[in-house]
Amino acid sequence: MKVLLEEKIAKKYGETIKKLGYQVIQYDEKNPNEKEDYGEDILIGAINLEKINYKKHKNLKYIFLTSVGIDFLDLDYIKEKEIILSNNNGAYDEPIAEWIVYGLLQIDKEDRKNIENQKEKIWQRRSFSHNLYGKKALFMGTGTIAIAGAKRLKGFSMELNGFNTSGRKVEPFDNVYSIEELDEILPQMDYIIMCLPGTEKTHHILNKERFKILKDKVVIVNISRGATIDEEALVEALEEGKVRGAALDVFEEEPLNKDSKLWEMENVYIYPHISFTCEDLGKRQFETAYQNLKALKNDGDFKNIVDFDKGY
Image (cartoon, rainbow, N blue to C red):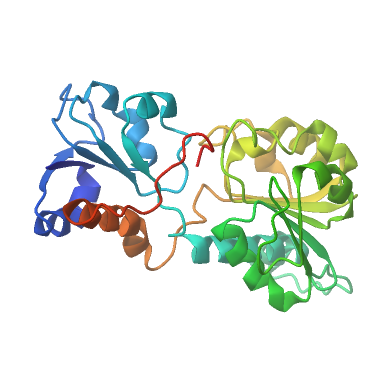
């Protein structure tokens, strides 16, 4: 069977894939559609697959993603063609969880002011600082990333709450709320941490109406998908002071437009979709794809097969 990868990924993992008995084909990232059809059975990649016209690849039977997100793909087409799709769910839990903690602390400890003062050699003591202990956090989503984030915040003596559609209980959250309870509990929360997949149901789940009912001076962290938040409504809430601060790794359009007001806001910390990055990224990146390549050669016990009805 033939496996198609972008040239950079092929350099990293090509030999490993060949040892499993596959033929490796690579394409040039700058000219991904140089060939109309590469004749591959398996396509491996992430957001870079947006650029390749995989709909013309007649033999394509499997897409193994190195990313968790899948919303950049034509899921209707993949479902119709009965292509087996896997994502990399669970591979980046630990690094993203650390970025959640980092974002909260950056905002609460006014990191930008600290760095600017150091740069200018200004010794300016402050008698006030926000704290995490004794506060209430709501994880929007209770999947593996949210669980990893909650475990790391447990030591800060916070009340850790989760949200999922049914209100199904999940460890280590103190409470988990359902969609019916969401508007009731949102106003009680000091921190909102977005950990939802990008689906029709989660699109703008944090919208203008919900920003109005949030607690004054709430803090927002988004490491999930940009479209889970209405960005215009977020900007408005930040300008009005309703939202005290935001740490944002994802945006409705990426790269974030240079004209976006978010760039200029003192209380906003912008990360260019890098919360998955870590020292052992290479191993994590290829984890699921490698397991599924092995499964194809053996019993076909695949990991992280996407449920098209759920959208993740």
